[in-house]
Length: 129
Image (tube, rainbow, N blue to C red; front, side, top):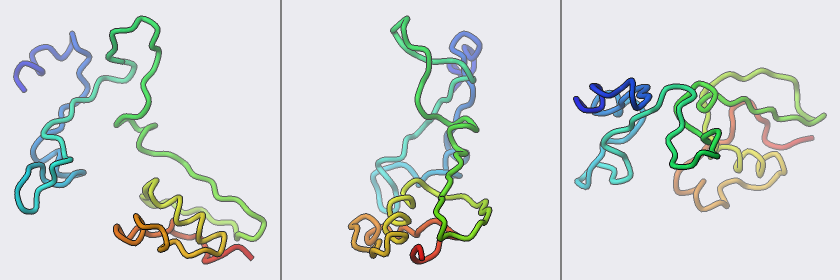
């Protein structure tokens, strides 16, 4: 951590997530009981506009921890749906089961939905009339 902090200007360091700050959004990292081997021990984010690459042609990066990357609007439209604004945290994994439900199909027929208990997006009816 000290090396990263000491060179933060040169490397365009935005924020370092580890320990308690990492635990806010991720499972506990590790290989033991109750730990998740997919969780990183540390995440380093660059300042806005900084892209790490060896190429002089790369202009942008896809995805990250910036506001525009973590807050994405989704519009569900159909004449059979009542107009509503729903502003709650959701996950992209909820899109597929929502589409199935709107088509009148059972979302739990998707293995991932059944295993993970993924809910449809809030405020979306059981089917379009």
